[in-house]
Image (tube, rainbow, N blue to C red; front, side):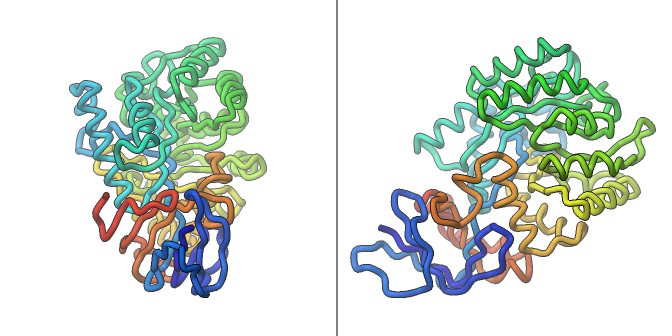
Length: 390
């Protein structure tokens, strides 16, 4: 029996701060949460009474094999799979040190992220839990074709999805539009029809996993929503002229269908100021309409390291009007629900894994306090102590 004593507790459900709580843990799972009291003599006490305890954070969009340098694509094209695996190990450790205990990797190469995920699960190395899409599904020459599976019609998309699932993917990624990282791809036009995206959605549902759609342009966002994906990445609402063309009816449909947006606001900071302001205005309206925001950073792309989630949450507060507790929920309870893993992680509730971080200060008042990581536990085991990954 383990007892984790929290001075303050934010449980990830969106509820306010609780004080002086004891979390009882058996076999890595929370079995009871009670007011501070006497601890059984045979219990292992983890005393975090001087800190605020928060669920382990979830980054819903990372690329563990990317270098986060000025030119990550150039690095990717010259490195072999062994180098990428070593890079991914280091990336996972950086994320874990920031209190990120779960990541969703939305684009790797050569099964590298599958091998890393399995090694972490086996306890060989330290790192976050990984949901891995493997190679994203894209059109011939489309966004991320250099690490993706190219598929050009409904049957080919279905086959590509099945191959990724057979290879070990525990989520899927489809490129609904082109992307800025891929020369020659079009960010404003849809790469796939509704029927083609729905083919991937059907295969994901058969395997009980979720689907993420990369969507910069409004046409692709519309098709992905209609097809029933679980999350839309970036969601910049770009029209054919490259300017923002927000479609409120699609946002209403997203809210109705529980399609979450993973906004990746950290790299958006490097967009042109006028475009960025328009994208943020669209996102504020999405939030007003009830669209769920699941936090994700696109870590690994240019100048976006794997400990950027704290910055992502700070932007939600400063630019989108989220309260700190709402921002924390976007990286905990909301994120877990959007990824279909809320029965395991995301909140500090009975039955969930004891994934948590302890920070100095009160992030419910000042979101930046999440940076003050003192301890990280994963399934009740200390994996980070005073900034050191164990």
